[in-house]
Image 1 (tube, rainbow over the protein chains, first blue to last red):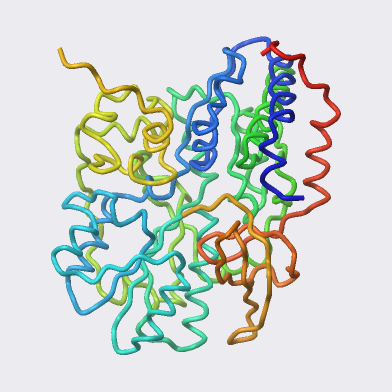
Image 2 (image 1 turned 90 degrees about the vertical axis):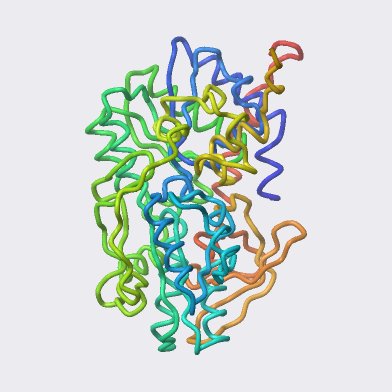
Length: 368
Length: 81
């Protein structure tokens, strides 16, 4: 077992595509929740293998994209205070806030470092115990366990200079929000496989029941996507709505109990804003008061978030809700590119706009 | 930030606080990974790793069952789309 090549095997992919074509008799609109899935779909040109009546809508599953602009502003203001180090993931330093991104804060003298793990930030804090270090941590249930580990390890070591500016969000409540939108066209979901690898599938039966919408937990290779679509379409064609796991090599119904327990010890569930979606009930995680000394918001008296304006030219809110396809955006590839992004979906490696820009860029518009 | 590719555990050791760590190969790239949430992982196992922490161990029997599903469906004749 090589774990990747088998799930990219052309013969298996064509067999799955043929089974999907045979199962499809009418139009269906299906949303893949996760940005990693969007990238697979676009990179492998999977829509060309699908029956023409199946439409894929790209979901909001890009953690960088849904981090509220106000929190980027908070991180930037904190970094610019000086006297501290702000560490964050590489994708985050290019995401525009209302007054610029973290890269521009670095140009103004702020000490902004890129790390690939909150545990790397913890290491930086250990190396310079005299200097405050703030880990700006974002992400879904996939990333929250790493942040929880960093906070618990820091607590155990009594590492007083380590704090976290946390903006972790929870995916199932956002799916409920999308389904509640009266403009919603989603008839079935491919749920985010790695989120479920951590938290399991416990929240989905209620969603399936309430919205009568099939949910298929799906992986990230081309064969995984086609298998997820087949399971979803078979349900839709039969008039059924159920929860199915199409990614059993990674997802057990209970998820990862140790990781879930760590999330529960460190975080509590709160209503949280998602960039593009608005306030999502139970859509986020906040550091519990018992770990208050590791919460950068409390330690540094970070000003409460004030609603900040998005760049008016950016249509990310519609893209994240699946109401606009990236290439249909008037700024796509013209006023908005990965080098000069107007919004987060063009920045992140998981953003839908970046996926299209990278893999399916149309030729430059001809001069008139 | 979300790395979808699984990595193989090459070695493991106990770090501070009795927390397990390991070296994981993602193709040619190797990096240190925290095994706090997958303490059962053994050398040779494939893991899903997010931002430096293993979040799940992959189940080979389940993977083979998924692949077997497609091996039993006859591929379409050439040129039939």
